Length: 89
Image (tube, rainbow, N blue to C red; front, top):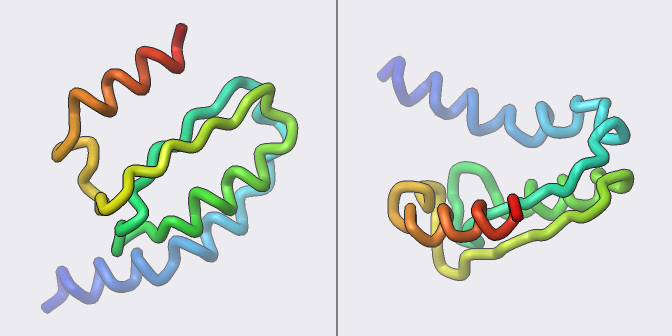
């Protein structure tokens, strides 16, 4: 179905799109990356790649949610909220 074709095209383009971002060096604020290590839509390797590119950031903190997939903001909203509030302090 057309919906699956579009979803597949988007998924296959994620890595390429991530590599085309060319202003990583302009990000100098603290960054919090929250990612599930079982995400089948946006692979965990994207979080690792982003962290390597954020060289000018004052701080890059990665929170790996073990066993969690793509929808962590919906499946663990209070935990994600807690992480964000801690990061903003």
